[in-house]
View (spheres, rainbow, N blue to C red):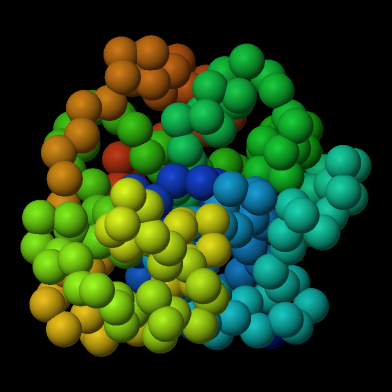
Length: 244
């Protein structure tokens, strides 16, 4: 979709939810072919992007041109000045996907103490369409885990090879067994490829049960006419065409 000779501009909020993150990036990648996408990433969102190894894809979606930037909460400071673009209607829409349960709770309470929740508030004030995909809602049964060492498979090698191979020193010993420190993990996948016993997994599906309070918060958000709430990132492109 184009507006005259200029690409449509989308602001995209990413929070600290790992669930639906990879699916979200697939949709972002497609929309970036016909739109200028700026990513507004909370401090927690920044970490999960690294954990899931999506930094390279992020740089391809947002190569750094004007309105194709990666905007980090850790670099914006408390005032979040670039969130003001939404008040000026610089963007045609704001998409928040995935929106963590914490973000949804703050939206309901009117709290704007992160880059993404501040962007939502400014978009509301500016009358910019807002599309939100909550990570915790009815129907979610499984989610994908980041890199994990399965201790039942680990053979407790006397000299664990992947500890030395990790370029980010993210694998450490705990109770004489290796574990991945996700505060340091950059999602490179070397441990997954190099563990001789296949003890490292990525994307493993585990069952989840959304909390009652998170489900209630999503219901409240659906009642707010300022938001279009979706249950899947796959519905974003079609919904975007409707709201613009």
